[in-house]
Image (tube, rainbow, N blue to C red):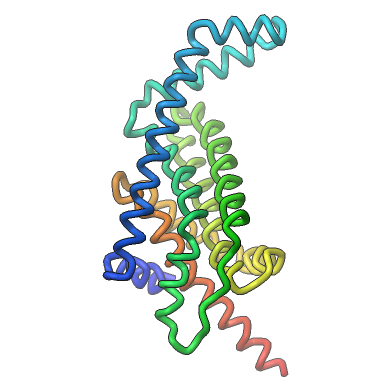
Length: 242
């Protein structure tokens, strides 16, 4: 697995990958800016007239949940741009991966000249997967925020949740180029320990400021190599049984 990670890191700076690297990083920055502006305006609205409007619309029974939600949003805002970007980065890169996954995966697959390249995942399917993982990521990370001040428990929740989500997304995007979606998910579940361990390396990568803008490139290329090895080992076992 470490060999696959090193291979992906080396490929990131190679000439064929550079154009995709710049495009994916640019899109990630744009998404972060848009989300940051949206969150700032949402917090400002909720802190002023929004809270009263929500309580008046839904009734006094939402006062406590609304107070908790405002408290969480206030903490997120107080954490500042850098920490906020760390929390938003996995979600932003998940959406970027949905756009550039096939382009990155094909470049990585061409380093295996004896094997054919995969079939591109349809753009709608890739975007749906990216948006789905982005929304789930945001939900998990928001839930982790209150635990940030409990002996670092929130940091651990954030890291392991990122490892699971990122490992799952990038592996399935790589596998779906060679298998139907159901088979790709089954292959991921059959090797869930390996995929989670690989996800931990992606989670470590995505936690590095600035560098994490290249997460879609690293995550996709890395999981292409992981999938090649797992699928190759599976084929060898089937051949031995025959």
